[in-house]
Image (tube, rainbow, N blue to C red; front, side, top):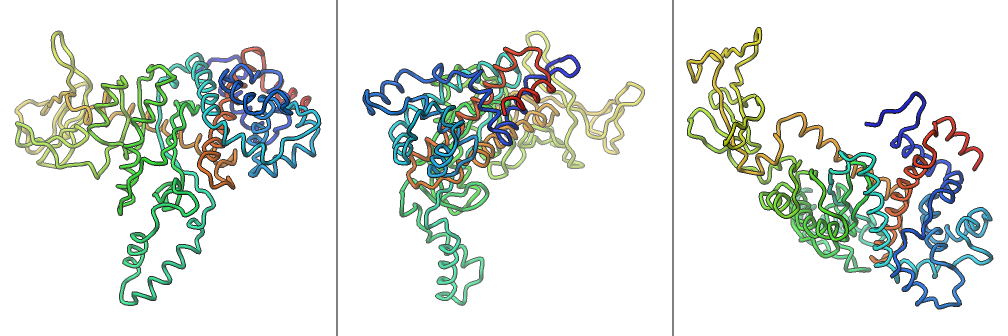
Length: 476
């Protein structure tokens, strides 16, 4: 997408180097951060008022210092506040980076900060997301116009998530019902599992991350660059179900609209393409995305749970599949797409040709043994995009659809980065508010790395990979 001179460092290359620096050479990253990022530019005024009102004028630590401490925690992947405080106490360089002169905040100070100022941390995340999204539009307008939705769960260390808890239930149920098969034992145990964790009723039983667990569920929305634009807690939006796939579909579909409304409360509706997995395959969702949120293309694979029989047409030899493709009933083969047709004063329609036809010497020839027409080029058929589920602004069988859906990996990579590399999946607290704040702080750190890469590229336009490597060695 970006044309550079030989050995010239592109924006996305620089971003990958910054992320690698965060993972493997955090000490060099801090020097770059100090030089190119001013955190106070992103902190909302309400955060200053709330923080200084709580701690008063005799505070020991500034708001920027507290936030920089959490930035260090995420960069170094320090799983506990105890580890964070120990590292700060033993590193003069890190204390200087965080502007801690003398004392280091106590564990209780860090803990209270995440719980008391959760709403302000969310506003900070939104401010940084707006800035990161504007950079995305400048650098990669095509990728920035794509919105990707997914859900994930953070699994706290509650008693119910201990494997011994399930094993004991299975063992006791098996002893009480020796005549039942193993699959019925599992089904019986699942139906009797508690719906919420004993330690916190917001930690609910759900099917997330590929397995059953007691977790706090979140909706994550990114653009195709993987920049987190919205993190929405879904503590109360799930409905219990005996079918895990149906469970996920119900909860994801309920989470979508509130999540988009949250996102567009601070970002304009300037996205053209929406991408999500098949859990959101629903007629109502398609119409809402098109009419309420102005998406022109919706890339959601069809889900078998929502599929019906093929739709008949006026031609007894042709039916329409769920994805809008004509099917030849004689040979059970789909018609081949031939592009769009739209003449003057004519509605948009899609042209399809006989599955037995092929091009030879620039002419289309049909080799069907039971032709439906006397035309040598074979049967042609037209469909109209009146059903937005079958025609979501893009042909479902086109290469463009498949290429766009591959970009959904961006949100999965971002979620993995936030949870694994920045330690949001190893939280020790059982309180849902600090867990949400911790997840937001991971997303804030991730977005700041993106902004840092942009600022370095902006102020060092002639920066090369070789010069960046030398710069990192000097700072280290």
